[in-house]
Amino acid sequence: MKGSGSGKAIVVVALFVAAILGSGCGSNPPCETDLAAVDAARKSAADAQARLDDLKRQKEQLEAQLAQEKTRNEELAKRKAELEAKIAELSK
Image (cartoon, rainbow, N blue to C red; front, side, top):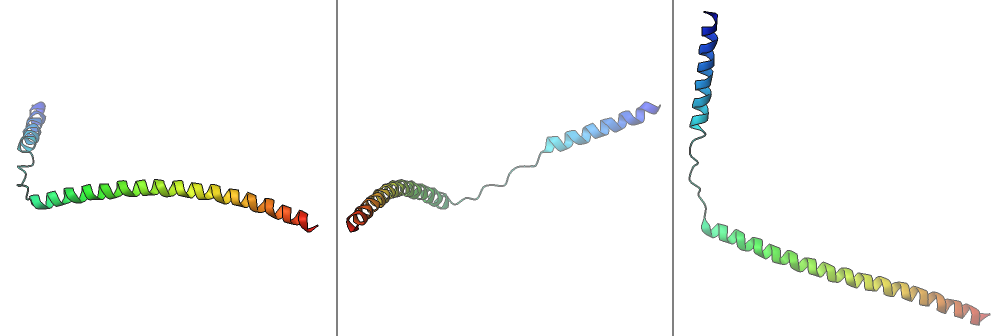
């Protein structure tokens, strides 16, 4: 009976796999959390988000101011060139 040995091996492997899958990893240990720490972490996260929002608004305002200053500098550079041209013309 050549087939009976391999048949028994298949049954043994099947039982072994079923035993492993059936037992799982066991139950999880109880979660030990300090509710005050969780609440503090939530508040800290909310405070950090509010600070981030404030910084984003501040960045937008500063970028707008920077754009205005660049425009003003360009206008002043043009005006300077015009005045220097007039001075050169008057100096002749």
